[in-house]
Length: 313
Image (tube, rainbow, N blue to C red; front, side):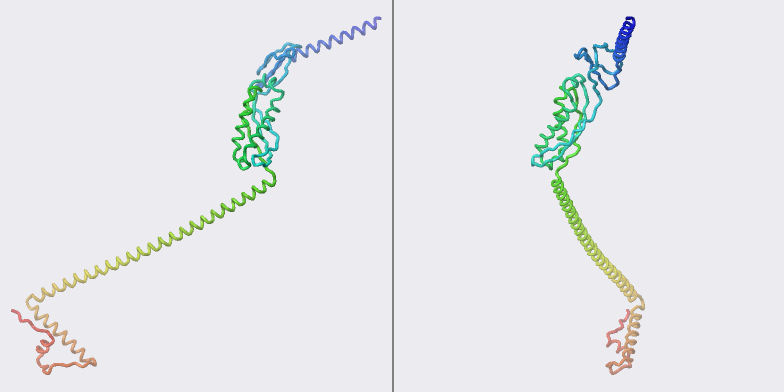
């Protein structure tokens, strides 16, 4: 009997010891330290009690519990690839990235079961509807428009879910292989077209430059020829003027010499000498010359040649 009582006492002691350990554990776990940019949602007996911000907090054991832990930092959510049809019935594969953060921990915990999954689904449905209004060629150019529309739709439900969508970015737009091949051929044709246009423009500009050079060369040659003619004319004119001036000066000097005393005799003597020298040269050449019959009087011969001595007064 004593043995049974001892066993019962040990069992009771073990039970109370276990309950004490549970109490100690609950007492210790009721002390919660919340890190920065985190929020703990506390429930008391299954009902929302309060939100714990950064710091140390003490909960009521056995009554309070942390039901949700929300991270307040901005996070990146991958949107899986999905098939979308454009307005011209081309099927493309599109994926993206959502940048989102929790601004109301209570609504993020109770407003929706999983705001991440809900944001992904809403982004995908919005993306399909937006792509359905665009042609394939414009989808690559309207990325910013598509991103803005998805952000607007997510922001409308953000207040209900307690989240804020900061950005949405389309990562890839992958058309079918046949469309990619056609686009590559089109781009190749466009590049060849631009290359031909650039080559023709270069040849055109080259011809223009060559013709301009020939034109300028012709102008320079004509201007040079004109300047040469002008210079030669001016040189000839200067030469004529100088010769005329020298001749005029010589005539003036001769006139002054003739009018001076003995000047006429000197002129007569010089002309007579030159005339006789010419007759001597003609006599040495094989030329027939007819002289007057009387060569004894040279004065008469000179007068017949037109060389007369003017008597001085």
